[in-house]
Image (cartoon, rainbow, N blue to C red; front, side, top):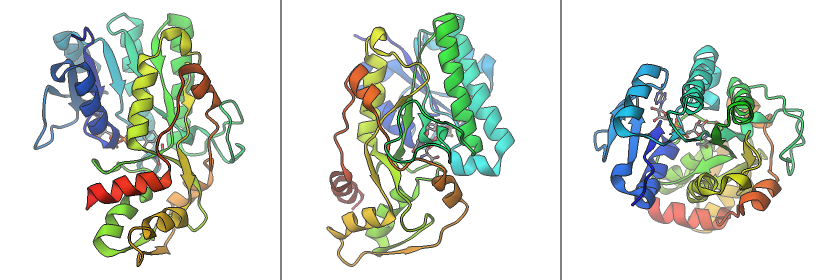
Length: 310
Ligand code: NAD
Ligand code: SER
C-alpha cells in the first residue's frame, strides 16, 4: 500500500491525463487526486476543482486529502502565452510559488514541475544542446520556465525543498490533445493523416525540433520522481532527449503507412518561436544521474500513433 498521496494540478491537459492514469496504476487509484479548473464530462476518480492561483483552496485540498506530493502541470504553453504575456507570467510563476512555498512550509514533501526546451534561446547552440549553455529565451513562456528553474534550484538550496524537473521536448501522444504549444503540429499531423491523408504545417520546411513520445515522457517523469534524492544532482531542470525531426521527417515516417499522404506549409507566428529553440538535446546528465534512456524513435512512435488513432 502506498503511503504517498499525490495531487496533479492541471490534470486534464495533454500530459495530466496520461500521467494520472499511470500514477493511479502505480500508487493506487484513490491515492492520486486530480485537480483542474473544471471537471471533464467523464471525469474519473478523486477530483477537485482547483485554480492554482487560489492558494487557500490549494491548501484546503492538500489538508483534506493528506497530499504528500504535487505534480504541477497548470501553465500557459508557448503559443498561447505569446497572446497573453502578462497572464502567462502570472499563472506560470505564481502557480509555482504556491507549490514551492507549501513545500517550504512542510505542508507537502515532494514537488514535480516541468520545464521546457523553451528555456533556450536564439543564442543557444542549436545542435546537441548541452545541459549548461547560453540561455537567453525570447518568448514569455521560455522566460517563465527559465525563471521557474532558477526558483526551483533556489528553494532546494535555501530551504531544502525536494523539487524535481525535466525540460520536456515537444510531447506527442494519441490519448490526449495538445494545449497550445509550438510543437502541437506533430500531434495534429497524425490526426489529419488518418482523416484526410494530408496536412498543412504551421511550421516551415526544415524546422527541426526535439520531440518525445508521451510514454517516454511519463516514464522519465516518474523515474525522476522515484530516484533516490542523492541521484537528483540537478535541481533546476534536466535536459532529456527522445528524437528530433522536421515536418518532412514525420511525413516520410507517416508515408510508410499511408503512401499517398501529402504535406504542405503555411507557417505562422509559431515559426519564430520554433526558430529560437534547439534542434536536438544532449541529455548526458539525466542518463548518468538517474539512468534515463528513451525507448521510442520516430518510426516506432508513428506506428503506435497511427494504429491507435485509427
Ligand atoms: P495543457 O495545456 O494540455 O494542460 C494544462 C492543464 O492545466 C489544462 O487542463 C488546464 O485546464 C489546466 N489549467 C490551466 N490553468 C489552470 C489553473 N489556473 N489552475 C489549475 N489548472 C489550470 O498542457 P500540457 O501539455 O499538459 O503541459 C503541462 C506542463 O508541461 C506545462 O507546464 C507545460 O509548460 C509543460 N510542458 C509541456 C510540453 C508539451 O509538449 N506538452 C512540453 C514542455 C513542457
Ligand atoms: N511543447 C511545448 C510548446 O510547444 C514546449 O514546451 O509550448
